[in-house]
Amino acid sequence: MDKRPARAYVPIDIDRRAPLAAEKLDLLILKTLALRSEHGYGIGQRIEQMSRGVFKVTLGSLYPALQRLEKDGLIGAEWTTSENNRRARVYRITAAGRKRLAREQEDWERVSAAVTRILKTT
Image 1 (tube, rainbow, N blue to C red):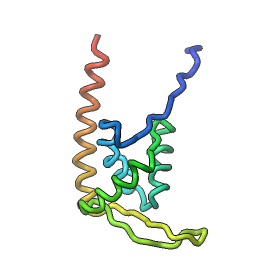
Image 2 (image 1 turned 90 degrees about the vertical axis):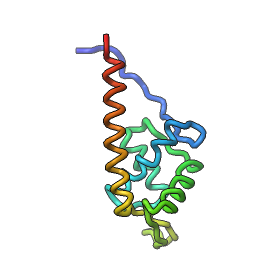
Image 3 (image 1 turned 60 degrees about the vertical axis):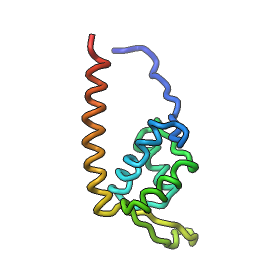
């Protein structure tokens, strides 16, 4: 049994100033919305939850990404009233967004598998 202490992770802030993380933010948003429609803040919370705290999406990068995805027709949005009677903009993935998600997920899996193979080469 391994008696080393568990490695503590410092969350990776997904911020528009960090190119690689921001580049993959669209993929993470599309995947989140493929699971269920969600309001903006909830999307960021869900990404953090699904990554087990590894990713922390800053609002300064989340909302511009949502606007860009909506402009590109990959997500749609509508104003609703939340359970605490506040206005909330709820986002959903479109058919075009599902197609983009499938393509980008496939690309990511291929690239990440190749990087993993290289890093594990002895």
